[in-house]
Length: 392
Image (tube, rainbow, N blue to C red; front, side):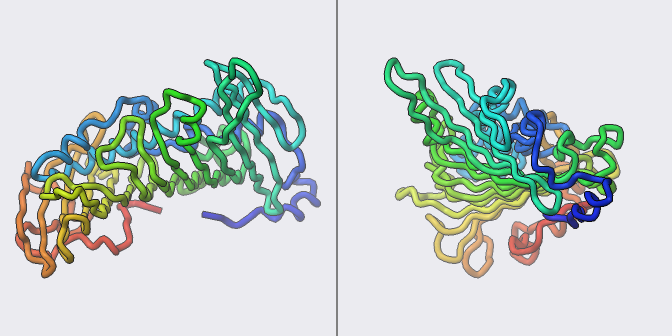
């Protein structure tokens, strides 16, 4: 999201602010570089993002997919997908974070950082451009080459993109901060797009098993009055994670928004083979999942996730629907108090359904009516705007 720009010409003429400065320090370039802190996504305030990124391969998603009931452990799956995305971000971003610790090889408005480690030559190039509205855009590229036994280096581009920063460069918009940090009283925003190419990475890092590309378009906003809002639109293109995927390479999109201390939402769409229904040809269905959560007045995280699958082995007009509700949380995600899955035919009639519930009212009514196992009158509307309580 863009906000009202600073009128730089007036402020600079008045001697109050040197907007659109034509130079930047080395520390400014380092502060603007894409890092895991800027790009990592998370599900809840208590999540340990670093641990999620460094975790092992997903297990429960494949296990659930192989069971006959398509159990909608939607929060577990949401957490697994977030962890998977972060883990693959880290694969490339750790090279950037490592190389910018050294002094740049070039000066001026384009700086190149380069070093060699573990048989790889990493070269990170970043260019600074001052904008008329006072913001600064940094474009960048990470190239990696395997050190050959002889001959010349063959660099390949494994990451590229840009970040536009508004506000003090010393302040990271992904951090809540405070007025005492020099930026807390001002709007600070990082907007950008980064593309990670794992197929290219595998050509120079022979033990890399991931393939395909991930593009992350993100906006980290710290408003001095409202607080922090972080959002991202993540696109997968023929993406196969390092641990493999029995569903095959994924092409799809994820949409994420989180306000720390308030709540968040996560939507993902992709194609996959549903193993819970007869599917001898291995046809892929289109899957959409919407997860929402917020910090309720009782101090617990209240949450709900809805999912729908169509196409593939499902007959025309049929749809598989799942829902999970939670109040409270376990160590890593809201604890499920209710789940249901059902198969509907083209008229909306229930063909089959299963459900389970703990407690009297595990689904917070603020998220709307709970879908019924016997009719479609209260089915979740996947075309409706996705919001969560307290969102600003």
